[in-house]
Length: 407
Ligand code: FAD
Image (cartoon, rainbow, N blue to C red; front, side, top):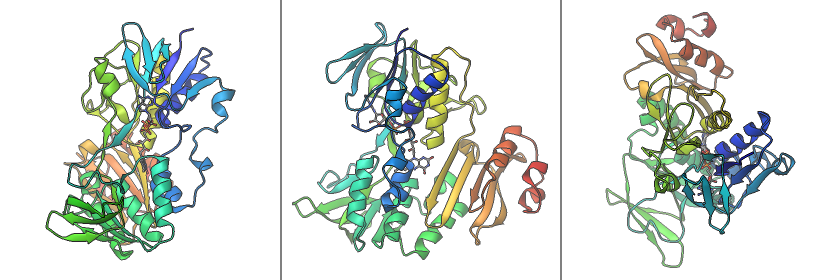
């Protein structure tokens, strides 16, 4: 039995290891990490875990002993440094190397760095790991700090909400005049913006950071905006998106296009090498577009599909993309093809003002995406509407009395 080697001990990698065992594979499985941590979940890092409401244990998708019990060789801090597709080997930083039968690249993504004066000063932080979240929690837990957040995407907005709930002064800089509008449109972005404003989060929109100032002794003191305003700061967190970690794949000669390019079965351009999770740019069988999804559900679904493909089974990543967020008392879930929503019409069931609604994106009278806010147990129905591609009546769609299944 040749080894199944997985590079990247994040959610996609861990799910793939577990799926290999669930599917009855009894040969060697090696899972390589670089963070010195057993695989953990990131979504709580900007929410409950940052707030101090969730334990470290609750972050684990598999209990620590699971890897031993299932004979998965987990090396948490010996990063892979090169791959040789011809000899089917992976070399590690510590000098070891593994021969693989099949190889999965699940190297995830890293925060995009900001190239402005002061961005590299000590005390300016990016946000991706458990360590980042623990550091920020220790700074914010007592309240009263001035936090400037650069970036008004999902992670920036979630950190803002948590920091504010902990009693800190929060100012958020974003490129869009309404946060999240590129992802969910202006009307829905406004729902989140209004909730933040109500809670006392301050915004500078649209605005970019031009410079970060420090005291020279490892403390930041201010962020200067592109309009020349100086915002005093005790803490600065930059959350301006992520970049897929493709260096290994590139140097091994794999096709890389906004991530490691893979087909629907998650096969890369090199034989016996697969990719899944945040790093993979996947050909979706429904939209026929390459899409790189940076979400939790995609890491799980991709880990499963990759493992089954590695075992030679017929598998395809055909899930409808799904993600969620929690900000203050707004709980949201979204399913759909974001790429198709640009030309779609919005139909709302419930009211945006009440903050309890389902929004549907309708293209040629078919639902291509749906998002529920503070309305629960509707995701299966939303996904069924999208998957069936059936035409629906707008009035019925907007009517809370009509069961979604009956449309
Ligand atoms: P990663 O989690 O990035 O894991 C990859 C791992 O590979 C890393 O540990 C890395 O160190 C390791 N690695 C990289 N290169 C090597 C190498 N050469 N050798 C060995 N190891 C290597 N998604 C949602 O759907 N909803 C949310 O609410 C949500 N909230 C989030 C909040 C935060 C703060 C963050 C950071 C992300 C959030 N996400 C959310 C996104 C979700 O967490 C990611 O999509 C998911 O973690 C991707 O999993 P992954 O395994 O592909 O990559």
